[in-house]
Amino acid sequence: MVALAAAFGNESLVPSLLDFVQPRYAEGKSSMARTAAHACTALAAITGVDLRFDDRGAPRPLADVAKDYRERLTRK
Image (cartoon, rainbow, N blue to C red; front, side, top):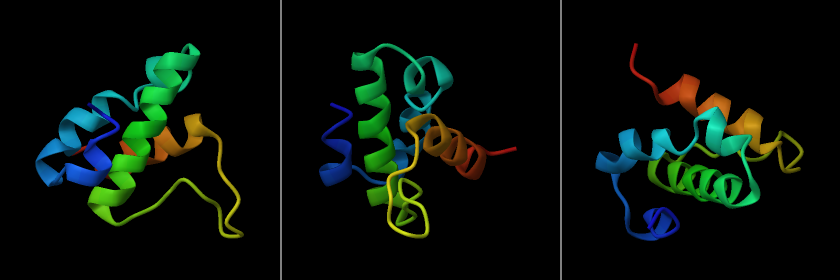
């Protein structure tokens, strides 16, 4: 379901997607890390802000991307 959010999701899913970029997912076992990666892809598509790549276009570590999305999108 998380993988479909990039294509079919909207801003109402952002709070739920943030659950999947928590450290236990982003730094977890491979299946959990894949879920976190799908959540990051969905967040990039929904928000229009793609934090998955650095300034040169190289992929960034998943844990760093997840952390940056949490910091950027979590309401304080």
